[in-house]
Image (cartoon, rainbow, N blue to C red; front, side):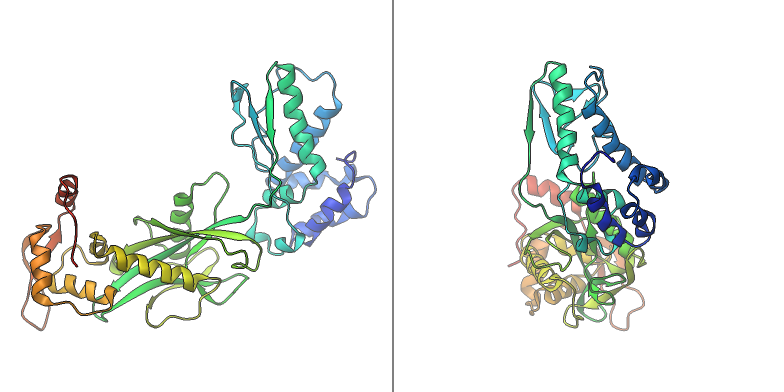
Length: 381
């Protein structure tokens, strides 16, 4: 690393990261950086990052590197440029498809070390000299093995990627639709309410990230999340350019125990018509999800997810009236819902109610899927 020009200026911004700064700060004052690089290996993951770049530099200086040099770690981690080989994309059992170049970022974007893994932070701040070195290693080794290479360099800045989950729940007693919000414990917008969500981790799919963030911040799990929309306004996040993929889910609140963890201080249900101020552009995301649910409710049986497993026809109608925010004709609603033959009548009645007990029903999902294959259209309007 001491042979790589300007390394001191590359590492200096890392001293501004809490805790990490106390370890790296001496590097900017001691001419022979090699003497103090050893403490880096004591930091989990960071040691492997340093070894990765030392490995690249040593290969470049070696003119007699073995032809069977493995191309697995450390090259398959984040921070590489995308290298595609010729006829075969695998060398020595290691795939090159996953290599990517981490976009450079300004040190001001790393003020909160909890927002970015240390490995990503270091990769983002490494100089272009090191990135080119890693690509040159690939080219050299592939040429020695008689394979042609094609290197793609991404000249455009790439945004951060997050997921946000809008979770709706129905309160039949209060006759209102509710949404799950979390109180942020970290900046930006610390202490303000937001939709559950967070950054997508390396190697995660979008749905995996959405499921994980929802469970971590609210305790809600085992729900069907449907992709909603992609929100990419460059100014939507004060930390920089961050694109968010929105998801939405419909749940019955009494089926889930709420528990806020990780970077959420609190998690709570809020009535749609009585919301607090929301962080980021989450008011827009929430409205988009609400519009989607209202539109889809009339042609797909998604509303049953909001009800208890056993429900009355009156509760089902009330669900539609609450979500659609308008009154429905009792006779027409019952006629349409029974005509579709998707409800299974139970030999049970309501219990513990002051009024006359009503018959209970269940949604027959298996029958619905069979009828859909036969061309059934779920239409209540």
